[in-house]
Amino acid sequence: MPEQSTQQASAARARALDAIIIGAGFGGMYALHLLRGLGLSARVYDDATSVGGTWSWNRYPGARVDFPGGPYYCYTFSEELVREWDWAETQPDQPSVLAYLNYVADKFDLRRDIELQTRVTSAQYDEATQRWTVETNHGARVSAQFLICAVGTLSAANRPNIPGLDSFAGECYHTGHWPHEKVDFTGKRVGIIGTGSSGVQAIPIMAREAAHLTVFQRTPQYTIPAGNRPLDPAVTRQTRDNWPQVRQQMIESPFGAPFVPSTRSALDDTPEQRKALYETHWQKGGLGIAFDSYHDILFEQAANHTLADFVRSKIGQIVRDPTIAKKLMPDYLIGTKRQILDSGYYETFNRDNVNLVDLRDDPIQAITPGGVRTRSGEHPLDMLVLATGYDAITGALQNLNPRGRGGVTLKQQWAERFNTYLGMAIPGFPNLFMIHGPETPSVLFNMPLGAELEGEWIRDCIRYLREHRLGAIEPAPGVETAWGEEVAEVASHTLFPLTESWYTGANIPGKHRQFAVHMGGPRYFQKLSKVAGKGYEGFALEPELRAPAAARS
Ligand code: NA7
Image 1 (cartoon, rainbow, N blue to C red):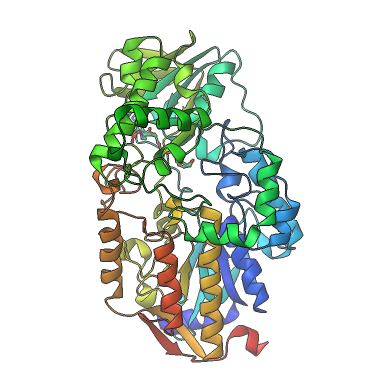
Image 2 (cartoon, rainbow, N blue to C red; image 1 turned 90 degrees about the vertical axis):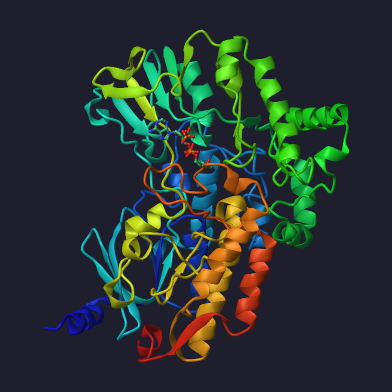
């Protein structure tokens, strides 16, 4: 049988839905809710044991929201939900966010269309039927007109390619695949590789419990006190009383938080004034020090240096041993890697049971059955924690590796560079939508809110296609080039591209460098609305070749 007709036959045999959603985190759960609202049949698949996406996998000790939390890092679409869920802290911890997402799954009766512990093993588009066929690790074969990839930006764990890693005889965990049972550090010699957000959050807790903790640091990072505290009931009340305005303010703010950005330049103030302002923010904790203190911290090097100097001076004050303090002092532009919030990170290095190995002076040579061997010698360990991050933003999509038009795989398509239109769709992959895909604001905007706005755009787009009897949508030839240029252009006005980070792809050996985040925030979402308002400008729309599943049944 020719390949085309085999595909058609197999698509016809598959269970037929309107939409398949991959990922049961913030994005996928809301997409399901929205599509049900259109009367569509949809099903969500997720490999995890619970809903929650990233919040289901990242159970490492200390995992917390590192964005203005409480009533802001959550769904905003339902005022009723906002009113009935009480957040306890300003920076909710992982169990709280997971409990919230489970509550949402129940409240909106989502579970009956979510299949957990189910991995999508293949996804293939069939041009003749304008449908996707998906297979799972349980042998199910399902077809749908639309494939919505809500696979997460930080879900493809980066297991470092260090010689001997598999030979380690003790317990070994990656922060992104943390066991569900409590990991017991008591009495153990623990080592941790990596000092990004995950490592910095976990290290103070591990140090308190372990007999000894060795921190293997390749690049020192700036971290700001999280200032986590019980949420002031007055804040919750005010937020609820003014909910439509608060939500609107979030949508219009650069990072999706309900704060008014400063209009002052750091260079307008005297050094004493700056220091006083930074000190106030430092004491309060949170991201305000970088995002609300002055408007140009992330845009002007001279302004950036003033805050970087301040944080380095804090490290010098907090860490008693000047040699260790120096090793902990970063020298990149502050805020241009994922800005970390911590609870007692630098203080941890004053403990007698903690030592810091600076891998720039003393690189890892191998992991042995008994520990980590660096140039200076062996560090014996009972447990090794890999806080080595993720193949961010594109990794999970490439691991899914859908096959689009002509059987081209996403890995082939993105071998040199990734390309998208609006970060929502990929040329040659009709009827595939991404939530928090590359070239969206994703990790540099309030992620639940961004997922909502993108999900609503997808819902509206699907409604438009159905109303106009259109069977397929994909980026028109060439639009992805202009979109990539726009993403690079917006980023070029900031300091972000000057730093090697997972935003640029620099953390994964061999990954090409391309800035993966649209930094326009509200400007991005306005663009989405504009494109929709112009009948999905920039997209090629194909007439329906046959009736959609819902219409047939
Ligand atoms: P990150 O921010 O990518 O941090 C990974 C850390 O691991 C970082 O310090 C890396 O050093 C280090 N790393 C990675 N590979 C190696 C090898 N081979 N050797 C030594 N050190 C290595 O990931 P996170 O999980 O901390 O943060 C993602 C979070 O952002 C997410 O959980 C949210 O909280 C927000 P490098 O800086 O590359 O030199």
